[in-house]
Image (cartoon, rainbow, N blue to C red; front, top):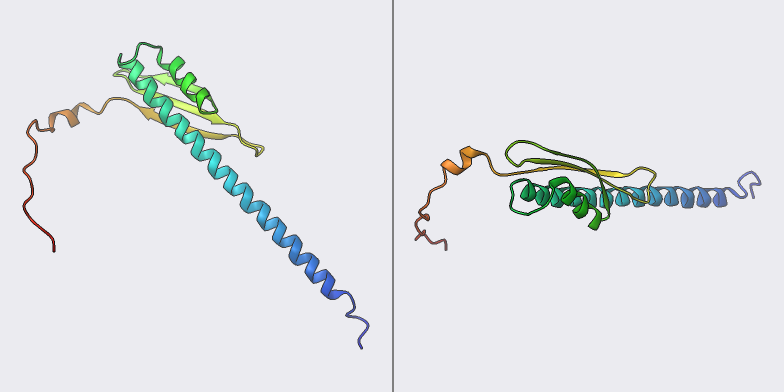
Length: 133
């Protein structure tokens, strides 16, 4: 029996368990960051759409106040809101997460460019008669 190898199996098992726990913690942190980023992005998108409707006069409200209200309902905090000519609104949202840093979402919404409206036909496209089989 070799006496120099005694206890080396325990050290290997402990290092393997420790490495597994560290990797699991890192994967959990990445997953948490991904969820927080998705929530911040969704809150920014919804806030920008609501604010753009208000900026265009479709809703009777101040665009940035409405964006702040929508953001708050989704658990975020409005950190920036700016309106431009034509009803375009830029919104920046911060979302608190369990991690040491907040997630941030940025979104811009407004009416489509004028060039899009000129190419739209008022007649519906003809029905397709081709079949795939």
